[in-house]
Length: 222
Image (cartoon, rainbow, N blue to C red; front, top):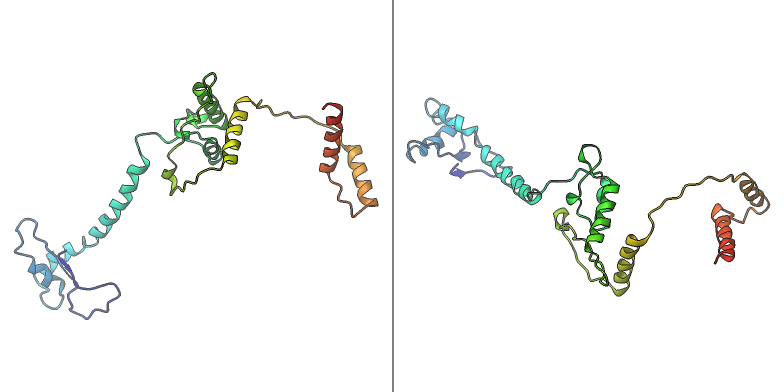
């Protein structure tokens, strides 16, 4: 296409020229005027229009090719030569929160998927490798967050830096144990409902009883 004679939304008259084609890949630029007359239906509809109308079909092709480069340009940004880990959104969120590049974690779940335990194990191993006697442990390398969109960086206050450091230390030293137990709370519920009937304005909840029990336990075992 050498020239587009109309714009979007223009009302065209019958016989008006829409565009000019250069359909001479083998014969040079001599036949450029022929496509112009070929698109004009009233002028010559015998010889030139038929071969010229077939090139008119590929006319939208430049539009489609103009879209492809845009989509292709996104590809190289994502595919940086590294594999993309298979993981659930919740696992990816955990990895981001504790500063683990999930694409570097080896998945042990079905089909090589990365599980929550895989991320935690990787984080502990990274902290163990980076820790040295007498020196603070180095934080694991963070992923390139700009892959997911614009990044805005703000300096952390001293309080936030201290909290982050303490949380990192707690992650290394705290016992990651979940205790499950069962208790019969029938009498407890009976007392709570009785108090609720006699004192309807008193919002007596389970939390209040739990606080009372914990307070008594701390007095006995400070």
